View 1: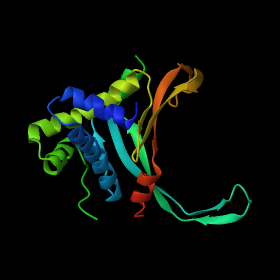
View 2: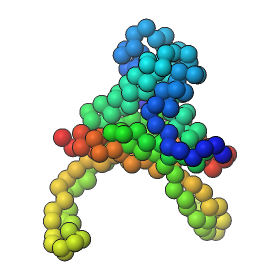
View 3: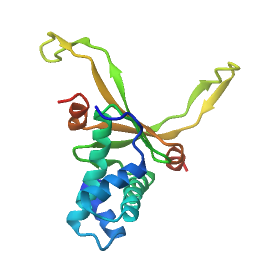
View 4: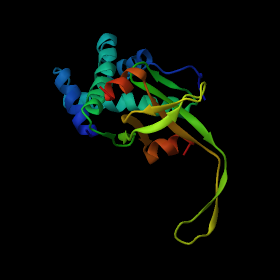
Length: 92
Length: 98
């Protein structure tokens, strides 16, 4: 499933929404997750899963093409853990 | 940086209500619909790719032998399907203030 298919499925469940509104709804929801993580917050969606960020230390990496050593800054990376309900449904 | 509390469905519903001007009730229902449609696709065995957000990717794990860490006893871990998330470059950059 890709974004446009999700938008179409949402529009089908809420038939009085215009295609544009359905697109904005989907956009707003995923945007709110990125905004929260960027603000250092967690996102908890019971049954579905939780988004958080994890810290990565700076390290010396290598350009795989040239073999040259490059410094990689410390950063935060997004993490998702599927919720219990969803995990169980995937294996039924 | 704003307050550090956890973002939940209710607040996501508020965001939809404010941004799009739909009723609060419908806005919360829409959050649920979006999560349900994504979940349904994953349960059907489809990966879900949301451009500029990221991809939910299913992986099938083989059966392997594990160990009960408490008793040391060997126990089989049955084949199972796990869900992973691959964030988009946009999300990675935004989280690092780029």
